[in-house]
Each structure stands twice: as structure tokens, then as C-alpha cells.
Length: 392
Image 1 (cartoon, rainbow, N blue to C red):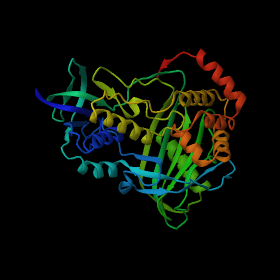
Image 2 (cartoon, one colour):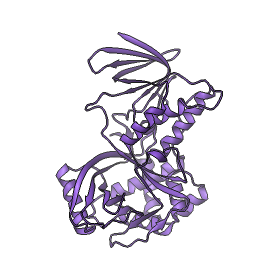
Image 3 (spheres, helix red, strand yellow):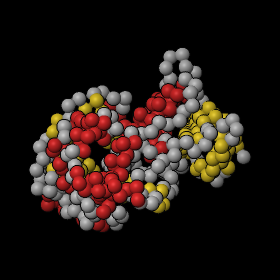
Image 4 (cartoon, rainbow, N blue to C red):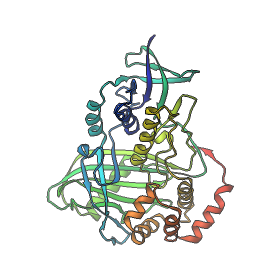
């Protein structure tokens, strides 16, 4: 069995794994660069498909040269199609494709050891950790490191409430210039609504004739591919009225939305990051900004000799509010489309975006809470402690 040793092993080369590797290998002046090994699943069923990450950020950012597009305005439409275009103030809404992130970041990772292998086991030892791996040709591989950061999502989580955010999108090019390239259609609730949860259209225009158009649901179970395509065809033809267009590519995904407790520390020398470390916001499914906060904190701790425990991605009070919303959606007590339409109508865009990033003060949270259906929210919050956690 082949064996290698590093200061740090990162499992998974998605947003969390690559971001952490980049930060570790670019330390402040005077700090010793650690030996970092990145283990990624070989091409095949265990490697995640290409993805699009979207996030909002104040002004210029670290990955701006890798972006597909960015916007300074967004719109949320209610079921009747009403909803003004809202400026985002100091924020920009940014679109980053995973192939561009990978191809753009890897050349900046000087000194990285990059291995394609499947990690089958991680043993926490007295002075570090040992990973048992299998290479693409089936050969065993052993890796040892002082610290291990695992970004693979857990197979199951225990939670009181759980929904799925599931979606399918088309990268398309219209025959006529009918798109508005300066505005993101963040949520368009003119789509038929499911019995529980909500659905909406999502449009990221990258030009007057090009866009990523998605159909998204928050509901207990995912759909089959033909149902997504039918919903997308209805949205593009009957609601957006795009006319003739060509489909250049597709994207599909499922994001669990739960109130599960994510254990960020899996051992004395093993930690979880990214979605596995609780970076997904339960009420929205956004994670990229929280991943950057988390990996920045981990890298800073390692560079300065502190214990590199990933910090919580969001304040506990925000997670409690998210759990209440998810329970309200699951029970049908809170209708999703009016809930989000009202929030984006009545709360300033900058404040709401800061809230969704976990960056608001308690007084601001209270003001936002007053723009929600108060009695159903209070009733739902009261019953949450009575619910048991079950595996999902």
C-alpha cells in the first residue's frame, strides 16, 4: 500500500475544498506554507456534476475574474407578476460556474498535491489522522496528515423538519433579444404552486439572448426529469414568452433544507466543512458566502497555530427562525409564495441580504420578523420543541 504524509488533507474538490486549499496555500507574509493534499473522487458517479454557485457580495470580490456574470438589481414577482426591480445598493449578485472556479483556481495552488481517489475510511489517531483510499485503478492508498477537512455531505442527518430544494435549469439562447441582462429574476411565483412548499422560476440573464432559466421547488420530494422539463417549458413559453430558443445545456440538483445539527468536528484531528459543516442556509439553500467565511477562519487558525475548528455558519437565532419557516412550509400553515413576496416587498434589499447571510443584529431580525405572518410563525415556533428528530 502506497503511503504519503501531509500537514493537511482536504477531502473533496468542490467550493469548500478548493477555497480552503487556496487560502491555506496563500498565507500572510512570514507564515510557513503548509503541505496540503487535496483528494477528489475520480471522474464517475462519485464526483459531483458541474454546478452553478450564486451569491451576493459587497463590491469587488476574490473570484471576480472567474465569474460568468454579475448584476446590481433583482426582482421577486408575486403570483400576479407584480414586483419592482430592486437595486442591491453596495451588493452585487454573482454567478460562478464550477468548471470556471476549478480551472481558474487550480493554477494558483502552487505546492498542492492533487490526488484522484475515493476515501473509504478516516481514522483519528493520537497525532493526526489516517485516510484509507482507493485509486482509479483499484490500488490501495494510505494518507496521513496532522489535520483532515472532509467536505463530503453526510449520508443521513437527523432533523425535526426537512424539505428538499430541487431544481432543473436550461442554459438557453433565444432567437430574439428578449431578455433583460441587467436584472436577476430571483423568484418568480407565477409558476403553479405545489400543495406543500412553494415553486418559482429563476432567471439569470447573461445577455439579451442568453440565460440560465430554472424551475425550482421547495417540497418534500423531488420530481422526475419529464416533470421538470414540462414545468420549464410552461415557464419559458407561457409565462416568460421567450419565443423560439435553443437549449445549450442543462443543470439539475437537490439541496436538503433541514434543521439538522451539523457536527463540525468529527474527531480530534478531523473536521467537516462546507455543506457537511452546516454552510447551507436552511431557508434558502445558499452556501457559497458561508463557505468563504468558514474556510477563511480555518485557514487563519492553522496559519497562526490555533485549533482549526470550523466556526458556525450562521447565528443560532437565525437557524431557529429558519426551522420555524421550514416547519410552517411543511405543515401548510405558511404559504411560501406570499411569504417571500412580502419579505422582498417590505424589507430593504440590503438588510434582507445581510439577514440571509447571517449578518444582522437582533433588532434588525425583529423588524424582519414583523414582516412575516406573526401568529402562524409563533404557533409553529411553539410546537417545534415537541417534535422529535428523525433520520433523513
